Length: 429
Image (cartoon, rainbow, N blue to C red; front, side, top):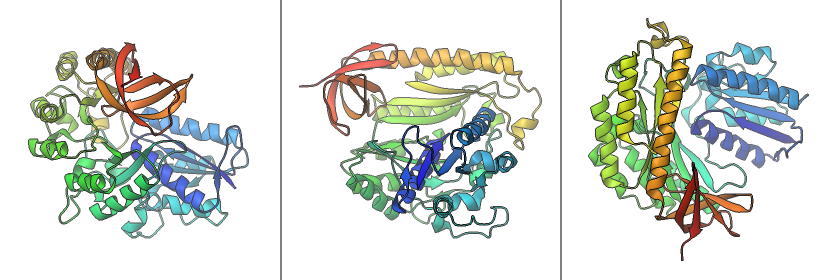
C-alpha cells in the first residue's frame, strides 16, 4: 500500500510528519513515487495565520483531485481550530489534543484499513507517553528533526497555538539522548531540536532545563551537528549563552522571536520583553557566537500600530542587523484578544508594511552574506542541482560548490562570491 504526506507550517509539523512516515514504513507501507497515486494521503496542516489556514484548505482540495479514491487523512492545527471544513470534504480527522498525541498510531491503523477511532471531541484523555513520536528525516536528507517539547504557556494576544497545542510538555533528557543516538546511527549528520516553544523546555520536569536537553543530545550524537529552533528573548541570558558555547557540535544559527521592534506594540502583544531586553539577548548571543546567523520573526500591522511605531520597529530591526527575517502581515485569529482590539489596521496597510520590512530583510541578508565572503566554513552537503552540490553552513547559509560530492559530506568550503542570495564556494585545501 502506498502513502503520500504533505506538511505545512513549522518544524514541529515536519517532525511529526517524518515520524508518521517512519511508522508507516515499519508497517510495510511505502511512499508513493512521483506521479503515482497514493492509497492514503496525509495532510498535516497549519493555522498560525489566516493565510496558513487558507493554504491548508487549498492543499486538501488539490490532494483530493490528484488522488481520487484515496483515504484523505487531515491532521494538524488548522483542523483543530476549524474542523468543519475537513469534515465537509469527507476527510478522516486526527486533530485535537487527543488526536495529535496519537497521530502516528492512528494514521497507521487507518492506512491498514482498520476503523478510525472516535472523534477527538469524544475521546477519553490519553496517556502522555503516546505523544512521544520518534525523530526522523525526509527520504534522502541528511538532516533529522527531533521534537523535544510541545505546547506553550505564553498566551500572546495574537496567537491561537496554546489553545491548539496545550500546555508545555517536555521529553526527558534520557529519552532525547536515546533518540539522538538512534538518528546519528542512521547516518544523519544534523539534528534539529525543535518544539512549539523550546525555551519553556523543562518547566514540567522536576530537574531539567533546555541546556540539559541540548547537552544530552550533544553527548549522544557527537558526530552530528545540532541546530536549535526559535528561542524566546527573555530566556537568552548570559548564563544560557555561556552554556551553549560549551556545546561542541552546536550550530551558530539562532532564531529569536521578535514580533515587533516597538515598545508601544510589544506590551499589547503580551510579549515578555521590551526592545532593550531583546537587544540584550542578541548581544549575549553575539558575544559568544560572533559569526552567528541570527534570524527573527516580525508581525506588521498589529492592531493599533501607528506609522511612527512601525517606523521605530524598522529602525530597531536595522540596528539588530539580522542575517534574515520572516515577515508576516498581522492575521486576526478568532478567539484571540488581538482580534477584538480596536484600531484594526486595513489589509492594504498591513501588506505595504510587510513589503517594506521584507525589503529591509533582504538588505540585511545581503550584508550578512557579504560579511561571510572570504571565510572558510564547514558545509554539510544535502542535495544536487544543475551539476552542483548544495549544502548549509552552521550559520545557515546555503552554499553551492561544483564537483562530485556525496550527500552527507561535511567539508570546509571557502566562500568566494555571491549573486544576490546565492553563495558560491570552493573546497578548501
